Image (tube, rainbow, N blue to C red; front, side):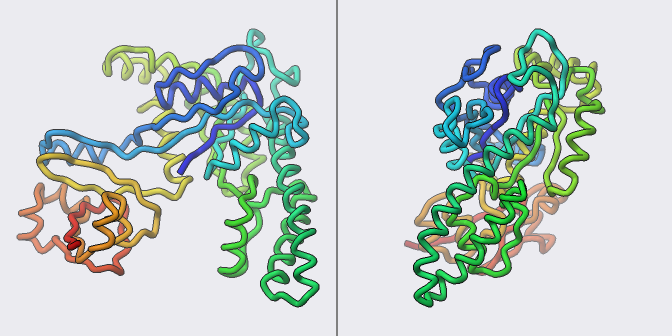
Length: 364
C-alpha cells in the first residue's frame, strides 16, 4: 500500500518526502526536478510500541511502516501529456492514496509556476487534470461496455449505469470519490476502474514557520474549500521540518519544536494520517526476542493477520491468543493478564482490533 505525494512543481513535495523518509531526493527551485518517482519506506510513529518495549525489554524492536512515493509536479495540460504528464499520472494511478501538497506561504525567492501564491487555483489545477484523465478512461470504457449492454448482458448494464454516473460527476468538475457505491457490485466495479480521483486524499498546507501552529489565510481558504470532501487538512512547515531532520540529537529537536510551539514534528502527524488514509492498522507481537508492530488492513480476520507474518501461519491457523493493548500495559505482562482473565483465545472469525497484542497457534 502506497501513498503518493502530488502537487504543482515547487510546492515542497520533494523536501517533504526527504523529511518523511530521510532519503535524499533531489530538491531544487525549478519544475520537473523530480522525474522518476522516489519511494521511501517510512516508520509509523507509535508511542504504544515504546511502552511495550519498556515492559518487555526485547532484544530488538520493529515498527510498522508505510510506503510514501514522491511524484513529480503536475502542470496544466498533464492529462494531455504536457510536461511529463502521462508518466506522472501513471505513477499516481499505482498509488492507493494521495497526499496533495499545497503551497500556502509567500516567498519571492521560490518561483511559482503560475506567477503567484493561490492554493485554491493550484488545487483546482491538479483536480481538473486528474478528472480529465479519469474522464478519458471512463469514456473509453463506456464505448466497450455499451455494446455488451445492448445484448442484454446484466453485468454490462450495471457497469454502464455506474460509468454514466461517474461521467456526469466528472463533467461537473467533481472527483469520483464523491460517488457512493449503491451495492457490493458497484464497490467491486469502482475498485476495478482504478480511477485516480476515486483514491482517498489528504491535503498538506505547506506554510511558513510562523504559521505552523495556527495556519494562515491560505490555510483558511483551503479548509473552507474542502469542508464537504471528508478529507483531512494538515498544516506543516516543510522548511522547518527539513531543519528539524538536520539536527543531531533528540534534545535539540525537542527544543526546536518547543520554540515553534509544537509537541511533535508535523511529519509524524502526517505519517500517521497517511497510514490511516490507507485504511491500515497495527497489531503487536511482544516477546523477549522482538517487539514488533505488524501492518494489516482495517477489518482483517485473525488468520489474515497471521498471514502477514508468514503464509504458513494463515494456512495452518488454529487459534489466536489476544490481549488488548490497554490490558497488557495495565497489568504489565502476559502472565498477569492471564491471571486477571484478560487473555482471550479467538478463532478464525475474529476481527483484529487496532493495538491487539497477539500470538498465533498454527499447524502445517
